[in-house]
Image (tube, rainbow, N blue to C red):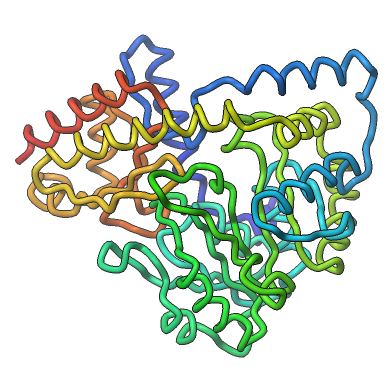
Length: 393
């Protein structure tokens, strides 16, 4: 049977592939240290679990509106007001089956064949694939360590054509963890407004910010930018709820209504129990969220310093998320391996250390390490990595 053209060019997720291989090795009895998965290692906070249990006991197990429960939409609206001083109406919010599905639905309702979406590199692995599934064309803007992996307004301006429809901004970023400042966002926003580009602001790591840094949403910079921005967010990373699959989008009513209509034919609705759990996440105090954040920050400081002890490795220190994205080109060039991908493969085979090659993120000189695991595991990972590097110097 011939498959549809739209899926023939899809690239499998490199993060899921490396995680799957690591799990297979572990199942075979190997002592594997896995730094591939992009999810918190904490369990979902107990007050959220209790809310889900209550919902089940009370029989809240039926269909909900395709775009989400009104109570959850209101909790999201209150969250925007509390955190970003942004005002939204219920018609401007759609709840989705994870933030990934919010992005997928957005591109499906936004793009026509050949429409271009500007994506800074390094990028989250699913951005270009989702654009291609909507018959759009990803246009990559290359960034690197020299500019802290941030796209400049000049780069954005140079990338715009007559068929550019949108630009994606992910802050803090997966895979780099870098955070755009308010001034940097304003400069990019001015270019987007000038050319009437929709801004897709992926803010899924919004709560994972370290030091004295502050998250700023593109939508909060001006009424004009709020109108021109679709904010993508969810509870997966902030509240350790990856498996619950609740995300959302906030933006223009026309776009949000189209996304809700699409959901009615694609998923019917996000899981009812998960929605009630998400209500609890957004209506409870954030003590547990702050505790997880503190743990992530401590891990970042430790792993970052351990990595800097490895000769030939350079790394931009992240401001948020839970990833480090070091450059290993010098190390690989001094080794017998032909590419970073081959180097990563042998690292897993020989040291049983799973990290993700940067090629899947559009950065062939880098690797991604997730520090969403215990300090003991991170220290062991750094030890194995250093041993592997020294072996092939």
